[in-house]
Image (tube, rainbow, N blue to C red; front, side, top):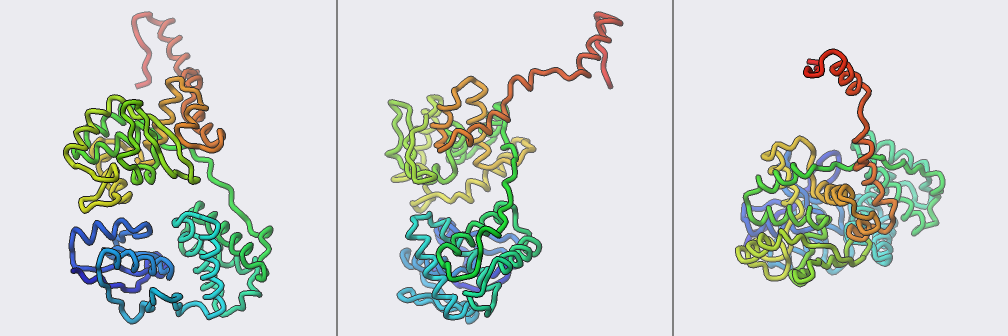
Length: 385
């Protein structure tokens, strides 16, 4: 059985823990299933953020498979039966931080949200060093945000997540001096989604030779699924007689039904006979859920092969699905239901992408050149080149 080693290192100015092992395909595929594991091209290693709750969960995850692990001296030892011991936070802050994580879990936030908020609050408390937690105020928040945005080059979405995490922390621990009304929340970018045209979609599918990869790409587009929804799909969720797909426990803990394209039936049947999945629609070679990072990786690779210059992600296929439905005249209320949006306003963004009337407006330059051509010679077309 492989021995997995944990080593502390710095990556993008953050404390991280490297997960190292002698190459083994089974170990690699299993570790990729852990939600917060990332791959560093620079350090050539899998890693997780230096977060004690995450490290504890990773150890349990490895123990369940029977793997053993070894920690270097700089990685704090975590007793799986007791509370984590942190070298960075004093006893008071460590206790409050651990109770904050339980507070988030009690609000039934997803594991991803708990890890994200927990990570940012942990980094903030570490940033304040030995300052008493009751004396921490919004100025400390401002200093931390200025440092994090400038030094770590956080994106706008990460900036908003930090603010949201600290507002939750202030609500959980009102004894601190943070006035949430004085914490500035930057506005969201109003960017339009990346949408592929139907020719690009078909070329992408055609260039994807691997049967499993082709099934994944076509399902993402043909049913408008989020990457997490696809990964969690089980065989029992397919109803081919009614051409319906049952999407369970999607974003916001909501179930919904969406469609299965009839043209996909032969492909899905071929995929099922070839790979013989047991529980999930898409499974890794050793069983269990497929890795979302693997989907992003082969999608990026096949997009280059297809000659698509746009940045293509799994969500781009969902955006394309919604836009193409609008273009063929589907009522926006039905699209909202198929996508699982809570508010119509969220779905309305696609109306900005698919303005048929705008696309039909002719530029005055086209009209001018056309009129010149007609006036000078009915058989000769005026060109700029």
